[in-house]
Length: 218
Image (cartoon, rainbow, N blue to C red; front, side, top):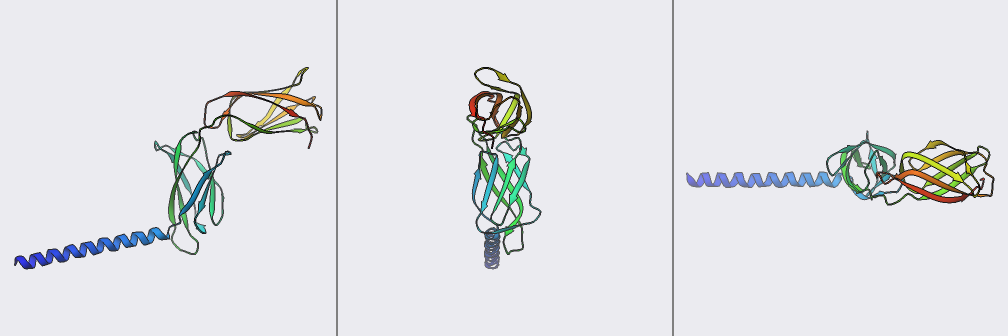
């Protein structure tokens, strides 16, 4: 009787092990069919680029982003093609690591959609850099482009030469550009600018940025 019980227990143990291995094999097979991320890059304009290994297809794809504390951030998909997906994150904080989940994505030519996970880090902003200043003589407009995303607090802009300060009206401010109306500038002349209340996006390091530009009308 004890032998029968022992054999039955042994058989049940072997069966459980076989089922466990079968389940593991199925999980591994499913995992191998899920799209894989090759690399994730964050650029200075606030966009995250996710490159997949091989080609993929999308369903009603959405993305969710969280920081290390579990706080959720609004993310917007800006572009997607057969091997990569781009998105931006709203109101992020610089210097933090973020995780993301992309839903409804599958390997090209397969039927089942998966959720793909990844992470990226937004470097702490160091300083605001003006990349280019353009002048439009016809509309009396000056546009100041920044190298990376910025934020503002009590923004003020001063345009001057050796003799006077010019009247400046802020027409529009984006997270990487300011558009101004400045009357009285002359094409070919050099002017100074002073921007007060600007900081690297995601920080509160508001500074004053100074520089010069020549009013070339393109």
